[in-house]
Image 1: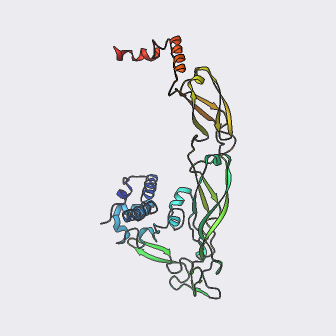
Image 2: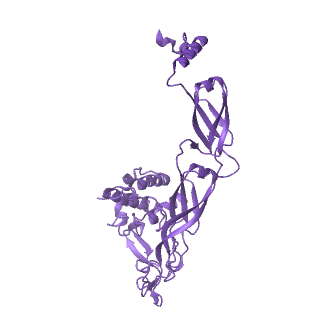
Image 3: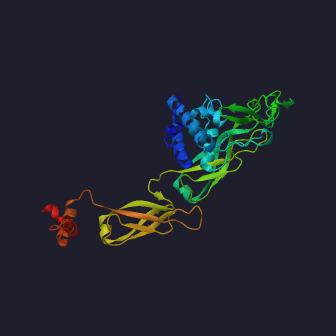
Length: 381
């Protein structure tokens, strides 16, 4: 017996479209085969939640499911052999399922608001969008940079120029669909028009396939491109490189490449939007007497004035020493939080002088501040 689609996604039957979408994203990331290599249970679960989402994201299919259950889509359910979702996406193709490709809306389209393969007249199909995860240093994020990246992707076959036909061979009308590129299939209560499985929507059939690409019209090659990273990017920033995704098929346009930025953690600085935070240890003598120290910034050293009687946790602001705004126009600040260091060991002379200092300050008789003692007095009574 097939599992309930709502239970698979962990949502109620009254869940909104946004709630269903969020639940699916979470489950898809959790069970995706790329994150669970060799885990058959995760693969099967990924198939199930993908099938559930194919139905519940569509208002008409969801209404039919709510009324008739799995019977609304015939014995095959919504996935597998077609069903309510049409040709089911290959759940193990990370680029076509997660970052573009396929019909009916990919996860990439949900995240980025576009992309994926789109079929046009004559079976021309837009290439899938691709994703590239790029890791950079915090300093690079601050100043921006140009970086060359390389990746493998399908490109137009140079032997057949993308036609899929061996040079000199002819192309004939597809006998399955009669050149229409689509066939009609009845599934349960629905009659669905689907892409022809023989010609894949082109309406034509190749007499002799290209020996280099096997009729695909595309071959996988390593591609190198230069991308400009603007100053101020942060982890999660997305850059679009037009037409650098997968090559289209049957004369379709290429998809786009999306570069997703990941900024490495820094040894000294912690970033919060455009502001930088850092902790600086100072000697207790400097904290008591005051003075000037040099602190690191992303653009070099900067002088910081420490006033007398500075306490641990005091935070100083260096105006404009943070990161540039990605939108331009201003820089964030650098906030320096000081921690007063107490000597771990003292020689005889140092100890004598500190004891004299303690006597002069009255610390020997009152080692705890008066304000705190007044608040905590009841605990000692």
